[in-house]
Length: 95
Image (cartoon, rainbow, N blue to C red):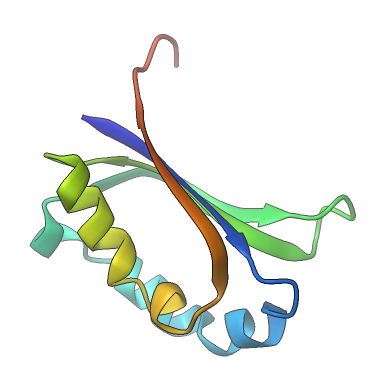
């Protein structure tokens, strides 16, 4: 099943995000232990089109529990970068 993970950063999280960015990218390089495949992911940005303010993932996971476990294990989650995270099932219609 597909899931969207929409994560918004705390207002003061940018320095912490940048400090953990390499660990986050390395974590995303192998998601097999969770049975998760990343379909698409990237940072959410402010209106200036550059300042990172969150993260968006479209993943394929065997269950909501697997999607939640994948998200909890992310170094960004461990660093407390995200203020609000929502995980929602998604049905692909186009694309």
